[in-house]
Image (tube, rainbow, N blue to C red; front, side):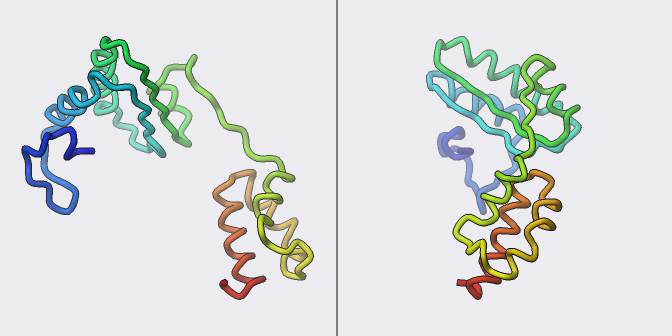
Length: 149
C-alpha cells in the first residue's frame, strides 16, 4: 500500500522506508481521493492517538470526492474506541455463547473422542466467549485427536 501511495518515488527496503508521517498521510489521501474504500485498523492498542486523529482529519478531507468510504476500528480498549469514534459510533461485540464456543472448538473434531469429552467444560470456561481462544483450543484438540494431521 505504501508503494502505491508513493507512486514509486522511494526505494522501499524490506517493505518499509523512513517517511515523515505527514508525507504518508498526504500520499494516502491522494491515493484514496477518487476511490471507494474500506479501511480496517485491527487491534489498536496505542493510547497516543495523535496519528489516528490526523489520519481522520485527512480522510474527512478526502471524503469530499463523493465516494463510498468506511473505516472499521477494532480494539479491546473501550477508552481507545470511544476516543477514536465517539460514544455514538461504538459497537461492542458480545462474547460468544457457550454453545457457539463449543461448536467452534469442535468444528471438524470428533466430539465423542475421550480427550474432547473430558476437556469440554474446561475449554468452554477458559474461552471466556472469545473466538480466538476457541480457535486455539480447536487446534489443540485437532492435533490431539488426529495426531497433528
